[in-house]
Length: 348
Image 1 (cartoon, rainbow, N blue to C red):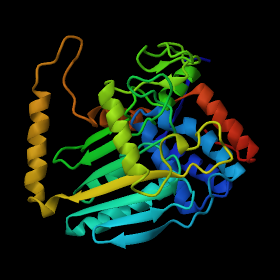
Image 2: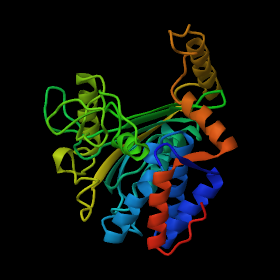
Image 3: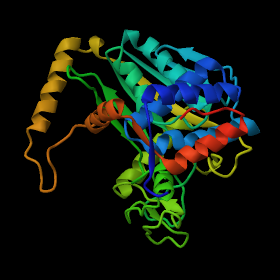
């Protein structure tokens, strides 16, 4: 089964996932946001944050640690900042709501929103792109349970704590940086397990703290760039946790393990209104020039050309929209099993 895939059209996948979540009791509007976010992750090639996560969400919805019909609301607004309480709902819907609030606040220049009582929200870039559609720069920061060994340590103390920044351009696609502060996300290791593949030696360590290429032996993750990745993870945890009133650090319940507990995650989201700083067209053209300069850089040995952040995802999306999205067979079987438990015929 390792290496086998099932090819699905994006529209079909989006509709099937929404139907599955609605059947599980999720509010239709929230279900469609989650389904679109998951499908977008697959289109970008981020299998680690795609369909593979759906059975987990369904399990938590069934147990009750994710609220099927949360009351997502702004609990504080002052000047250009606000705080959103997600009422323990699906993180995708909460983050979507929060970024819309940040965009509204940024009409006068910038808007920043702290989020608390949230849960896993998939790819951070999905929400940063909301701002790009309004000619704004989107910034999204979040945190996770402690799964990453800090630089100089032996046991985990920080999360994979992601950052996404999306920038409008005058080209077919925006600049989109979407990254974890670990060398790799846990989701990538889960995908490797599902595919029966090995992992690079700088992704994770085993229970004894030794680097491993076996995804089944991977116990803890490693920070990217050593001390630098660890430092960023800490700062992002502060912005997502203490600043928003959410849990933080080792206090965050495990995503895979403490299923009966609310995750109580926090996020930090921002929107920068380009037009309040410089003429929008001029800004987009200048970013386009920067992209041209990067593309003109002679490639190193083993590379065809230099890409800009988000370009690979855009090219992958174009290919998958044309040819269909390849879903690992094991992931698809898990999804079908989850659908069967809900008495839903998954037409995939």
